[in-house]
Image 1 (cartoon, rainbow, N blue to C red):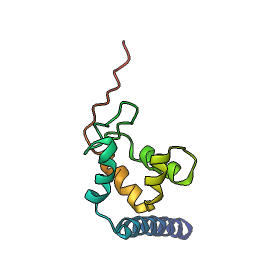
Image 2: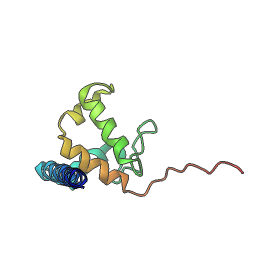
Image 3: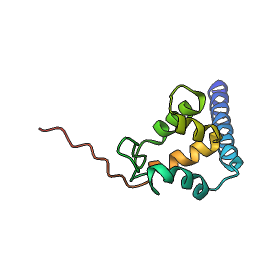
Length: 117
């Protein structure tokens, strides 16, 4: 019983610590969502749904974790693109998280049709 209670308390403590750290990282971003999105909007459209070139991806409606992973990959050099690498280099982890959440919540023109029955 004591062991189970201790495990529960330790698990809750770890969860609270992680939530507090994520909140701190988000608050650490000195730039507003509007300021961050403005830079992205130049190529991907105001809501990430209307890129200026057909080979630029639509960001709206993508999974936040996919967007976060992609931007971090440009920042650390795993993905290669001169423009995106330069833009991502100026973003903190908190900035990337904010952008990823923003674009994931935007209505998207992307559609995956259901498989035929």
